[in-house]
Length: 56
Image (cartoon, rainbow, N blue to C red; front, side, top):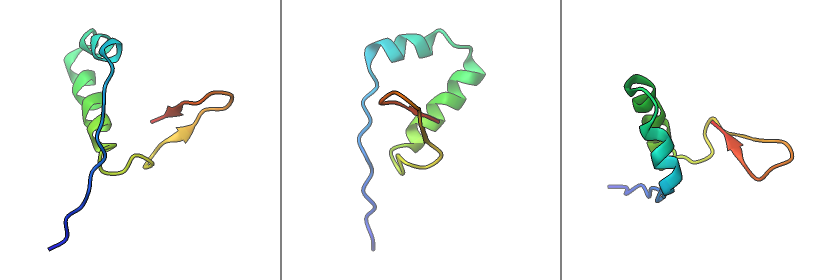
């Protein structure tokens, strides 16, 4: 049996508050995308030009 390690995700308080303000269907979609990052943090991401940030 192979155990697959997942990354730990930490969602900052200000991100949680912002997410809570979004309507339910979009909120669910965003949460699922964030949780998928625990399996593969580099899948479907693109580094933004001129900043230390990524886009999903």
